[in-house]
Length: 215
Length: 404
Image (cartoon, rainbow over all chains, first blue to last red; front, side, top):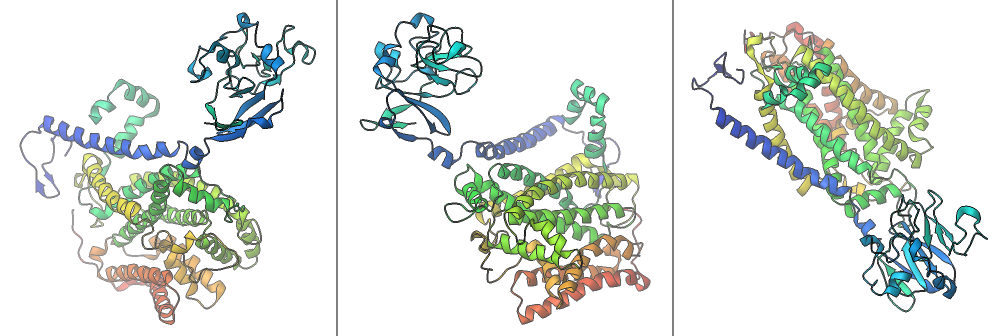
């Protein structure tokens, strides 16, 4: 019998009722049945989606310990944290000195533009300048905030070592080879760079005098 | 509701360009279905349901599984370790793996019931021979898929099962060695084997989906058989929707309850679905004390070992499957349903019993008694095909009903 109830009146030998179809009741049942079925399917989809999120062993590898005293003065070391590169620079007195005097050329000299460029410990003006818990040890995410390339470390001032890839008044810092973004030795981005923000901070703390825990 | 959706401007726009609405109407809503189908007819849509579950869980598992027999620091292999990682570290990985493993057994159970339905009610007879041929092809592809998949966890049973089965092909004269190396990609089952088996385990289900579509198309050309096995007029049919969407839906509900019991409470099914020995990592220097395939392949395994000659065993096993293709032509009776064929009915029930007994024998160690039982069951299995062309000569069918 078609759903509208016309036509034959016997199904499987059972005499069908002559009463007209109660459309309201039928729609209610249809809604309940399909609604419950849809809810069940949605519930069953949860494990499938959650399975694609980071697994327990991935989460367990989410912190990295590192001894910053292994980095000699002036050196950059790239270490892995959650599979991503992290810059650790041991800045000399001279390098820290060269952070000053070019605030007017920076997009965000005090690192306030985005939560990702800040940190809880970043309170004083000095800390906002050096962007480090201990000024000599800078720890930052190694990816350009533009599209994620790893910038090249060009720590010496001027064009002597770097040619025209950096401006003549270069105070030292990073130069991204992908799209030319420039950062100073605190990872602060220069005006005119395609990168929107300073290099992102990573959550870290000192476990001892020289040992840090990232993550 | 459905009418409103199918009449919506979007559906109409699609229909004018693809006839999709017409297809939905013809194959899902209005498809004329015999009004007297019993629950044995639910296994077709159940098989489709399990296939979808297997594909979905399989895609997810493939995101975490590593097809490599390379040794790891823990002393096992990447493949074995990645399965353990799925069980322990991946979110809901245990659920995905158990759904997939239980699903494999569920798939075979459903398909075997589907086959039994076809044999009992004569669904393979004219005009449904092609439908039957495609069905047997689907079974063979499924068995291949299951065999390839069982190697992947790289446990003891995976390893030795694959060793034994690939050696079967090595028993074939002349091309045996060639086939053996082609399958293994080395001189024994090893890293190249698990790598290519993973590729094939992903390929075969794709073939399966395509062939299932052809199977359903072929069905919708000749329409469903029915328990009485007679040709029926249009008036004896009812539309697929809502009558059989609801009935099949109820069948899916019952199936999912049983499926969930196994997935959540008994995923190894007493060692039937996931064999106990397979929780030990593969060791090429040590064969497990008792080695048998998973339950759904044991009937054919018993036929293999019932012959005292290596080549004969392999040939018999191949023949036991190939003969299924010929059933529509071996059976010469015009009457379809076993309800009206007293002799065939006894024969086909005996055939089902022989498959169950063969399965039991293959699952257990080949003791003196079970060897004998297995041989008798093998004889019964083959005699079914032998008597099939003869039975119609003397069998007097009961009078057929004129309508259902």
